[in-house]
Image (cartoon, rainbow, N blue to C red; front, top):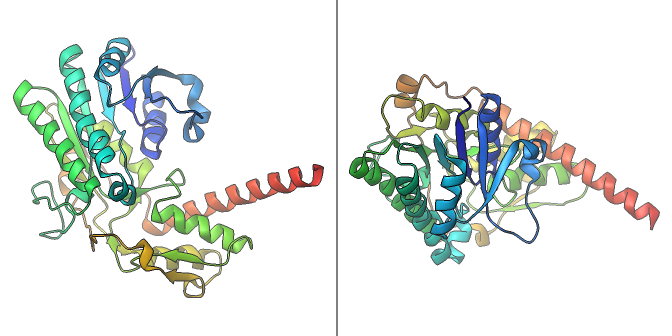
Length: 333
């Protein structure tokens, strides 16, 4: 009999890769779909017909209860959130409602309707913020430095509390920065690779960024969703840091991306104070030893350089295609 999985946030990079993984394993995949005027399905267009969508919202408990009843899930993956740190400063209340309270809502819906379902919560390295030790592990104290980070801490501890209070199989994956060609263009990695493609093709002159010396532990989202699935296949629920164990700066990312297309980043990148955070997170470095030992997961299947290059390749292809389409439309006017 097919396993059933319910995914929130399926249109994001993680949700789309996770859906592919689960479909490949023979799951029946359900997705919570929040109403928008224009559906945002770019990341899942190729598998859209294989997914059953259920209308709902993390802020609407009745819709979550309905979704759990319809999906009757063996596994629930909560990947939905207001996930952009910069926006969390502009919209701190909304971020708290969706990224924090939304977790409590879906945990409660699972507890009421399907308490034996296995639950995954997408926690974040941003919970460590102003880090108190390096590298960060599952026991490192949290010191969030943004409304987003604070909201993620709430969701993380609610997951642990539901596990301990109601004996639910609830896990939290503390994923460090993970990127892909499906990453939103507002995030610094896609902002860089998109700009590299546009500059290389003569469509953009420069790239304005904030703190080039910020250090992050960057991995490939497609590799990381495998860990989400592995967490829910264990005999006992637990929390895991998912990371590569390597740090690179934003400057390093720029250097690899620009040099890949034969350009020197120093000729194009401009530091702009507008893009600095209100409270900076200088470095994040995860220790994946527990996940490697207990889950059998292999970090760095995709290296940092490979990740940057595949993102540049994808953006070059996308920008060329969009530019060609625009030129064709223009020639017909």
